[in-house]
Image (cartoon, rainbow over all chains, first blue to last red; front, side):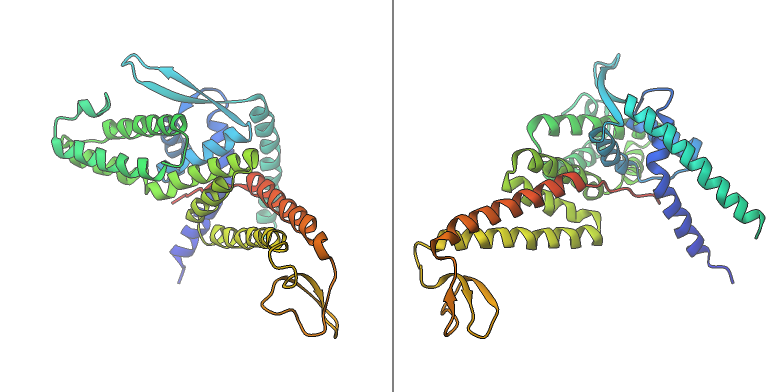
Length: 114
Length: 203
């Protein structure tokens, strides 16, 4: 009998592993604020992350100079923090894309021959 | 009360909101005032957006769902505080930042607890060398680096030096102890400030 829990845990580990990559992809063409980024991760990438945990991740990416943040005043007068890719973030993303394609291609090759 | 909370019409919803952010404020208290303010503003923005996006009429129910989706503040605020303290420790070498950084870092799980424990042992070693350096002038016969007659070395503040042992460094133990203490402290602190990682949770 198939262990659904095992598959679910494996999928969860895979998702955790690509979270940085997916966040960089989401920020590639636009700036986003935290909640908007979470919605995009859920809707476009199918990543159901615990919403609060995006902030330590964004904080680390900012410290690594992959993303930068700016406060923008909304029409309501409340400030909102937007994140965008830095130059280093774009270069890292370009390298990650190459690595990702290489990786998925090698796994696909394995699957075809299995 | 923030501008966002002024939009609640149900007092229970406001109480839930205040309780949630009260907890966050308690956890992020070690952060500098500016960092605390920015973090809370950002999380308020997130929670309010999430609250508004929930279907239904009841503010209490919508807010409860939004809080559940956001997760446990221990899981996302403590790692932020840990990262901030460890980065500050790397810049200032402040022992308080080191201690708080290691303490808050334990929220990241078993691996982080083990890492914090090992770093803690390293800092104890650094403290030990410093205490040896400080203790030497007060008790020159019991503090130092002793060579046992049968072989082997013992360093520290001893009740009784091993019988027949010879003290090797004399008062040189003071600069040696201070240098070793500083080198270990500095190295560990640079390591933890560079090696900080961030909690990520995918469900």
